[in-house]
Structure formats: C-alpha cells, structure tokens
Amino acid sequence: MGQKRWEQLKRFFYTLPPLLEGVKRQVFEKIKPLTTPLGKAFRKYIIPRSMVSFNKIIVRFTRQFIAIIKLPDKPVPKGFKILSLC
Image (cartoon, rainbow, N blue to C red; front, side):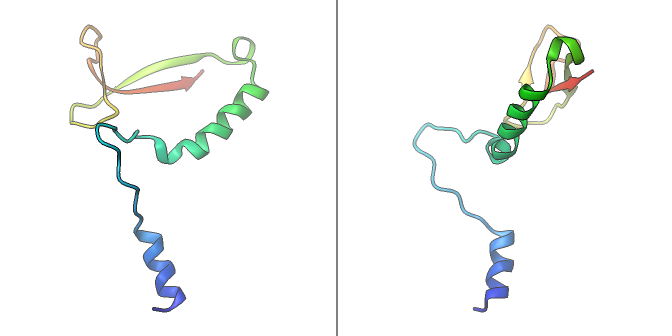
C-alpha cells in the first residue's frame, strides 16, 4: 500500500480504544482539545460582568441523542442547552 492510499484511509477511518465496563464516552470529547484553550483565552481577555452577559438557551430536539437535557417544567421540555454571549 502506498503512502497516498494510507493517508486517504487514515483520513476517513479512525479507531477508538474499547471502553471500560460501565463507562460512557462523553459526547463532546472530540472537541475538548479545541474548547479548553478557547475557554482559557476567553477567561483571560473577557471580564464577564463588565463586557458581556451569558444567556442559556434550550433548542427543542425530540429525537434521541446522548447530549439531550430534559426539563419537564419548562416551555421547551427536551433539547440541547446552548450558552450564548449577549
């Protein structure tokens, strides 16, 4: 197998180590290397109370997904929780 073919296969296929018994894989584990430095930079350069405010939004989603939150007493009882800057 040539290097170009290997790079194509490696680009589209990946493997993950097996999970331990009873352990769930976190949904957003793949983007953690991106979100961690961003969070540190945001904390360094933004003073939340003087410059921005945060708003919690729940976007309706009724299908099954592991990242869904359920709040039965709210107007949108089931969906994704999103934090926005205002």
